[in-house]
Length: 93
Ligand SMILES: [Zn+2]
Ligand SMILES: [Zn+2]
Image (cartoon, rainbow, N blue to C red; front, side, top):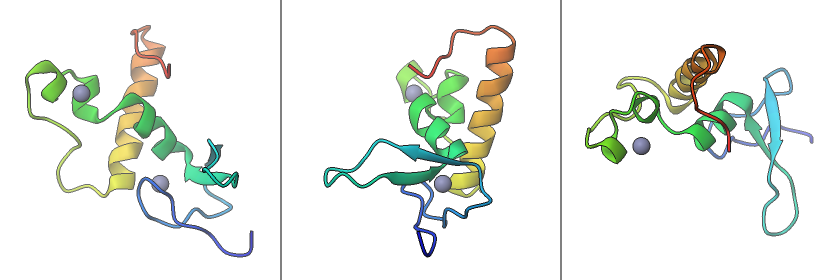
């Protein structure tokens, strides 16, 4: 890997010093690098979804306004980790 490729979720470069996940491979078999927080965000949904205020639950909340996709992902992951430590039911599967 000579230069960072953009994260498919947030579009920011995936740098070696970032918390990086190699996710599912693309159709041509090459691995996809994503920020760890973006992987979590992709799988658990938005902050609004975890708070059950998104359209799934009849609300209209999604990610916090004014944040970049990556910062919103960080918030979603932080919320997820807090929920998990409190024994809530959210899982990655
Ligand atoms: Zn990302
Ligand atoms: Zn939802």
